[in-house]
Length: 350
Image 1: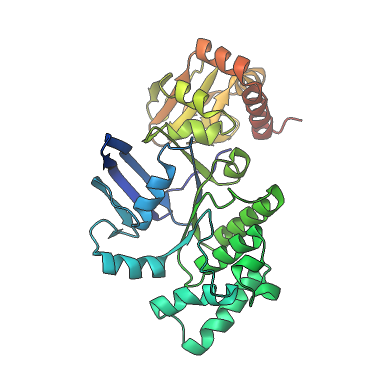
Image 2: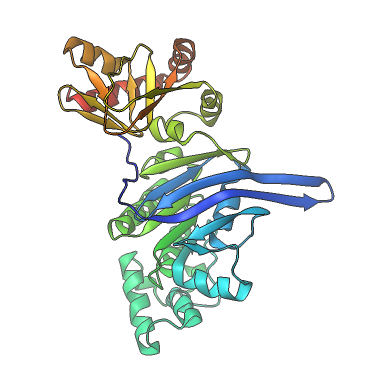
């Protein structure tokens, strides 16, 4: 089942109607088209999409490295877009840890000195404590033996691990990573993801741009951007194995069904996604926003004569017609396999 923010989670990053237009001699290009989303404290969110879709531009809006043409970005209720540049740089150093695809380590400084640098810049921690803290962070990422090496003397994977240690230097609540595994082999990339998951367990909020679908699926939530717009998040979240082209095609094919509180629910289509509310089974089962119900679930419900009803709030379902469903499973067999697996997991079937 999908992992969604619950009602008790604190909104940490709020992107509100953000438009970003770049001007050039060739004309204007809109990279983000009125994008809105909320990321909650403690989430691990992956942002996926084709090259040029607007993923990195969105990250730059959140960090304040670039500014929206219109709209606003709030991080912990502070408006990033309204800060002065001098204020923004210091705020960024204290509140955000940024991990870049190409590491961005200073070549004339050792790995240890690179990790100490953010503490010096923001004047955090006592000067005689900074080196010890930097060494502790390098130990966390397995680089204590390379602490005094220059970046050029270590591998790409080690440089990225050093960049992660540097991002953690000031103990920021948010880690933003732009294609952090793009230049790494699969083993090192997996290690980097393990580090991110460990940070999440310690309360950090992770936002990661990636083109690697297998890595994106390790996040707790996925956001899909295509041509500067966010495609219905439910599709990327529930069926993350779909190629981008299929997600785009499906985006406009869902019909909204609304069911009143406690009203019975009759499902006669092949695939539904719960957009909001809860779906309760007579066997005390509960399905919630982010879960999908396929023909495999319905077969089990029918066989065991389990009725369904809406929960304490109105239920909103997205329904996919039979024609689109058949086209989906015919072109992406992995989707059918995943739907069958999810139904088996939900109802305890082998």
